[in-house]
Amino acid sequence: MAGNGKPKIGVLALQGDFEAHQRALERAGAQASEVRTDSDLQKLDGLVIPGGESSTMLKLIMEEQLLEPLRRFGTNKPIFGTCAGAILLATEVTHPAQPSLGLVDMSIERNAYGRQIDSRISSIEVNGKSREAVFIRAPIIRRVGPKVNVLASYQDQPVLVEQGRHLVATFHPELTADDSIHRHFVDKVAAASNT
Image (cartoon, rainbow, N blue to C red; front, top):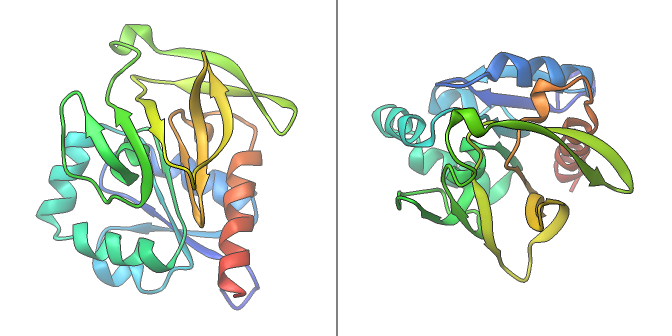
């Protein structure tokens, strides 16, 4: 935790709209920073892996030798993965298969809703409230394990799930004015930091 009592949450800044996540985290009560190296991870209470193109992001993670440091970080601290970040957190990736961090017990299919033209803004229900969800070449969670809690679904498929300290969204909550999902993650990070 920062000296001001705010959780220190990094956003992996290799690709994707990491700046929008930083702004949302700060509005939700965190101290946000960009993460590009293993040493950047050492100072954090939690991490967001943003959307982008998952195979490109994975290539950049490998080039920066961040795969194992990210996996180690996730065994002890919370990670929130959105869209491509969700793919990277899964235990199984299909269409096509690719390596992942394997931190959330789920199978996820890349680009499952179709191409960029099939992107959409829809409403989902989270905790009994309607929330706007921006899907951009979104993956679909095809299977969740018994320890995964489904927080929201769209077209009968899970789109917001959590397992232990980790949170996953197949959409882009950083692209709306509603910070409730980021606030939920900030609360998870704060709770994990106090244990």
